[in-house]
Image (cartoon, rainbow, N blue to C red; front, side, top):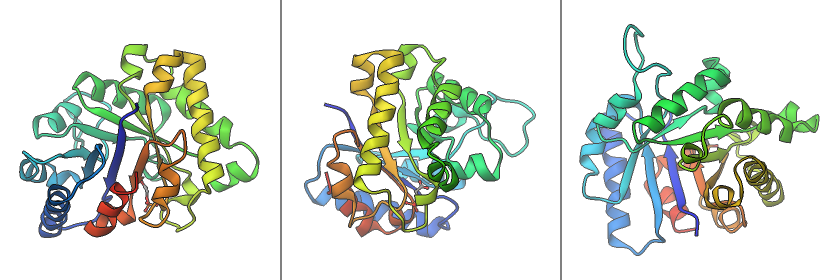
Length: 252
Ligand code: PGA
């Protein structure tokens, strides 16, 4: 049985009081109802991480950062390192989100370094891959995703690779309301798992959690999560409303 995961990527949203309220509402609902045994992860903005991690102590909610530095420490103004995240109570970190790749020009080599640093500080990397609309329309979606995997991750030893979570997020589905169809999602998740199988073998391919992201919400989550190779979701917009987010967790 693979670990099921629902992770909420809050992006650059929530002031301090909103962040506290959202996390408190979510953890409260999870406590009071019976939920499937999934990892529930919230990824607030950096400035709230320490406080929200403290607030969530003793609950089943884990805290992730939305990014980390590709260096360990030193003169990198404005950056936040993997060990800093660990020290304030994070257990995971999103790496290579398409917004980081597109707007901040993060490249495969940097994403590899971030992944290695996250792993060496016992943070679960939630590594994002996904094609743009032109790439899909040109029939290059599989090649794009394969090169994202192989350029940043396939040099990892098996013992490290097995600790990753991979999120397939087609760029055209993020924040657009245009979710991938069940067929498109399953086809790509199966492709990713097959490529992992070719590289790392059956045990690792069969054990790794693959999340879908891109306009996943309480209406479509059940269909997506029921797909054989989808193990949960990375949720943007719908993670900012406690009730919607909790309903997504309930969709397994
Ligand atoms: P969305 O974002 O759910 O708002 O489409 C998903 C993501 O970017 O992780």
